[in-house]
Image (tube, rainbow, N blue to C red; front, side, top):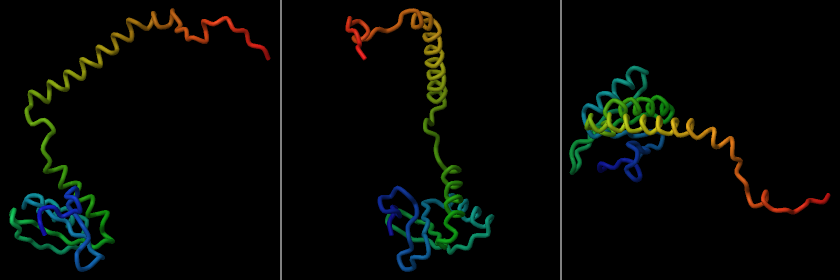
Length: 137
C-alpha cells in the first residue's frame, strides 16, 4: 500500500482489502494518527491499528467497522481541521486580501447608492417599446 490510500488519492480511506466490512483510514504523520485515535476513543468506537512501511515513509492505518463509519468520518474531519495549513500562510497577504474584499464591497455599495436615482428616473427602453405597432385582440 502506498501513500495514496483512496482510489485517486483524494480521500484517506478505502475498503479493507480482505474484509469488506471494514474501512481502512491512513495517515501520514504520527500527529494525525494520535488525533484520530483519541477521537475514536472519545466515542468508544472499536478500531484496529497498524502501521505500514512504504517507500515514502511510515503510514499509520486504522481499520474501523463499516457500522461505525459516521463516527470515523467525524473523527477524520477533526484530524483534517486540526492539521490543515491556512490558505495564505503569509499574514500580510491574508489581511491584505481581507481589506481588499471589504474595500471592493464598500465601493460597490457607494456606486449603487450614487446611481440609484439615475436608475429609477430613466426607464430602460427595449426595441419593442420604441415601435409603433398596435396590438389587436
